[in-house]
Image (cartoon, rainbow, N blue to C red):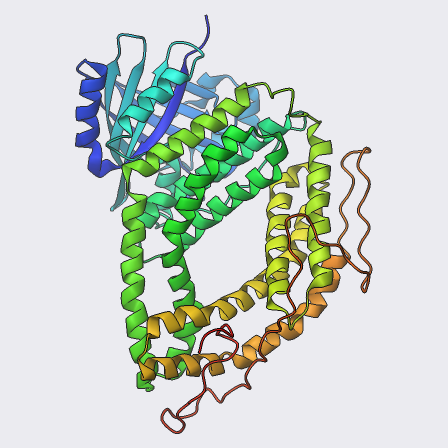
Length: 554
């Protein structure tokens, strides 16, 4: 008899009444409801957590049960709890060796509690729905949660996805298993929630290219979902939106890397909603960067300059509006529907055999080919890059970013430390190129917000002059980093793929596929640095800002 399958989702706690009404109609049955208490224990230094275990007491009718779970394997041990923890009943020598049960028992303290209400619907076709709502509490701090689990009696996931699609028409459901234990430890550390960064990937050496893509894509979706709730509840923290955009960029980069082994119908269905997601967050992120990196340093340095303060106030107003719009977009039920569809397509890739038109190669050979293609593209762009050609610097920034993402995806297949060593070199250059790009693109955005008001346009000129010295320093650093890119080497992962030799400085590069030759237009020179402490009003700038504005703006 085949094991049952399950799909897990995160639901919005504030919309549960709507979800329960929908479930009542779809399942055509009343739920069985129960309440549960779980008490989690650890040492004051969270030793259990660091070792990869979760320990809890759970009330079952009139009795308490002690349970220890290994997070990596999912294995769980349980025993009756009578007046104290008794680890000897588990009779697991390896567990005893890792935890030293005698010393551990003497240092356990209660770290957080989980109180939840479970509602279970049983469908006529064998499908069941489990809705859990509750709160995690540590001391005086608590956070609510809601999660939905759909189960089916056989190996066919399609009925589960069909049911999820029905439910997501009215409530935003995100395909992820909400980790309430992680929430508890965040509360214990004094945080309600924190922006999540991309997790390290561990690819199986014997996986197919499609399986590797599904693993990477699922991790990208998890990264996105882990930051969505925070972006909705804490719109004033720009890091959430930044991480959402990073997750989407990583997923799009993964699709590009694996494009040759993905069916066309998947590409046609997956890419449009990802572009829409990116666009919905773009304005908020652009204004956040503009305020944090470009405007605020100048406004803080010249607090008595009225033109700067007027522009600053306008930008703050528009930033708050953009944040509200982004938060609204992230809370739409349609967004959950799109993510469920994408998850369904990714799961199908795990199970489907590739068509004869798509050649399958061993994963290491595939990774070798893709990494070397990315490296060659970055080295060609580095050879073509010139300080007086902003288009070439933009091309280089994109190529570096693609190479970095690819190295992060496949780092578990590279020799120990190799990926980190290369990534460190690339990170410095990408950061400086990113700062240059922010400065170069700031002018158009600033002038769009200044409009035709002369004082605000003069404020833009002040900002350009203030950042002039920084712009010049960044440009001066670029040539030193280009040599690092030209000299990068990667180990051979497959004997069938030739190693890439570094491009010699001065050699004539051919452009990588999909990258057009850079134009001949040169960037305007950076303005001379101004004295940042000059009293406002002693000089009134009449010229337009230079490096911050594209040449077509007057």
